Image (cartoon, rainbow, N blue to C red; front, side, top):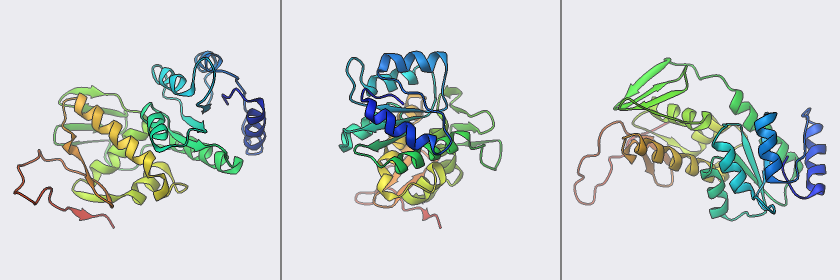
Length: 241
């Protein structure tokens, strides 16, 4: 637990210890980085607004050497701030003032997702120029490896295995993040999709692989985009049940 407010650390410690967790409190970002490097915990709860080194910078630096789960605890609850944290690699966020029970539930959900074994299905599959090896958590685009954290890899697998079918926001949130997540958490999903699109593009794939169906969800399109007739746009795929 990283926060410069000792009172917040006490509250978080008490609520998580009731759930069976052992909690170590750290008062600043520099101490957090040292701890994660030397004695990696199972998960980091990270405050955003701290003197010296803020939570966004800490998150970014951790992601440079570790995919350890990170939950942001932030009074900066604006949409842009939340999306910024998620785009830096945070797994989830909880806004201050927070309910200790909600924070504990989110921590358990993030840990459960991190420890979840690969879903059933073929160990590897190919869609267009994209190859996903589920057993090795390995993704390649045109032979070039793309580094993805577990959550983004799972999201890609769910979309690619249902190529051509619209996956609703609710279905993706439940399937990838867990039952605790609802349509109100759509920013988590949108940030993950944005990161996926960017990484696929860097690997040589165009953004057309993950297509938005406005107001409904996303679908995976394995075909290169074709020029659409004026006013038609993307064909409407089947919607997942």
